[in-house]
Length: 425
Image 1 (cartoon, rainbow, N blue to C red):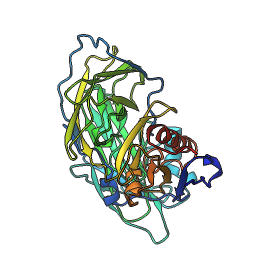
Image 2: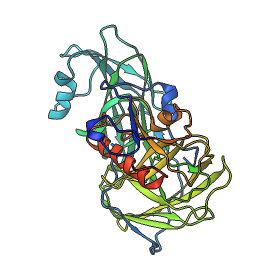
Image 3: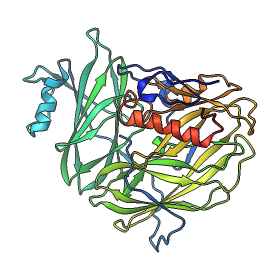
Image 4: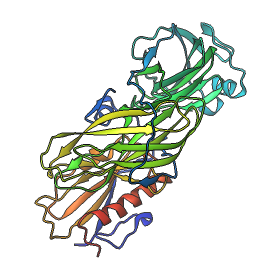
């Protein structure tokens, strides 16, 4: 049985059915959607482009570099955040304009010259700023501004939600408009006083966050925002594990080596990236090659990650726990992107009563805003005649299946055609 993709940009003469549930508007995810896609089953000790140009090697001499001890970041809790709502046009936002020009002054309580009314809020643990209510006139912006005094330049990072952008001392950083509370960005804090401003997008009544954290580490591996696989029984295919990596130092972490340390579950693998720039964020992808097929569903398997750069004082290691799954449920399936060497994933629902001697059709299903690929795949019941493959369009929100998102969809299609028992006619 042959199916032809109806979208002109995804036209393949193959056994493929594309089901597209795509919306062009921006949508914020609910808390239950967010938490369902927030991270892997477990992690030991707690813009998504990868660092381009990674290369594989079988094994490399990592050198005598000392592994930094695992230390959890410490929360930095300001005494106050000055909060002001702006309901005008985003393009005419006076606070943003002042930040861009370098003329922004720390606000005082009460209305300012632009009729923005500022008031102080005292944050609580976890970076909680309290609730921003919905407005009958529609979505609006809220600015939150604070001052942080540092005795010396610090390794400072922040998680904000649901935010458009973050500013520190005139430097712009991305926010998390969908409020998933998993991305962190590095802040170039200096000795002395630092002014931090966050612009929030309020579509409905929402709780706001601005979690500031410091650490002595040069690199921060964000285990809350991994792109991770699950392992179906009987499969030994190579997959990847993507880790957001913050370089918190003032120097480039060049010639970055990312290694999976061999253990009872995985072969040792090594990849090398050109590096991650100072005070910046990227994703690095580790190669996972199972030593043997997994035979028990629901088993936790440990992968040990090792990162180092000759530019840094220490090497860094983390242990991540992943899970095996049976062949009757949808699972996370990862691959290396040809776009930027990052790790990307798709939800896969295998055929029921799988027969390795048979060929199957392929359903490529494209999710809509606020839905993850794994959730899209789980929305289907198993078919005895087809695989369902639901790529995630550069995180669950993506690019409306344009630009990189479009390429990711095509890559997921190609990868599935090459990896599964698909009828190509």
